[in-house]
Length: 256
Image 1 (cartoon, rainbow, N blue to C red):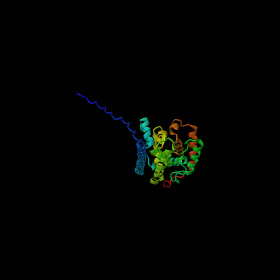
Image 2 (tube, rainbow, N blue to C red):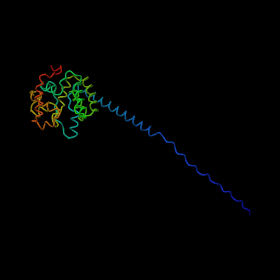
Image 3 (cartoon, rainbow, N blue to C red):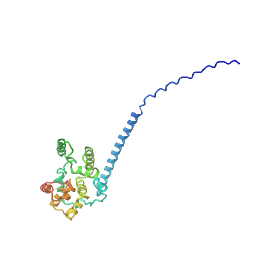
């Protein structure tokens, strides 16, 4: 039986799979995430300023019993603060004079910002290379105490400025000064002029005398140190300076 030779069928040589072209998904993904981050920050800022607006509207006629500084104290020490709200009529006139004489001589006349003081502070910061001075008015200090934090930065100063504008447009000068004196820190866990008067002099804020008022205001802005060093020479000197200036302090028109 004859056999036919079988033909060998050659299998095709496999061809290399071409490499996939590089995709552009990563840059696009990064752009999307960046846009989301920007919008998240914008929405967060808008929400924060809306909250500030609502609180300022509510506090325009209601006692203020909390602030960012008080909350920070509560969270860091797990203890409550000493603070008793008092209306404007329950704060001695000499306390208001001392606050203006010490903290913001142009308080009754400016729109929330002492531009000469800010210019002077900027020159000091440029010379030192750090943020040492802020030229803050009573309104700016109150904005910081109520809603922000103590650490100095240009971001905080920008937010402080925005809140100051809102506050000055919504509250009277009398209201700003009253709230400031009710939330200012006068020692470890001691907030407000009433708690300070009771703690240091065992009397209400309405009965403080000129020397006592000047001594309490002189504790700002370093109250925790002066709480432990009541006879410090710097505190005594500052108290004397405030006493000399109090007579010329220009109280808001509502106070006259």
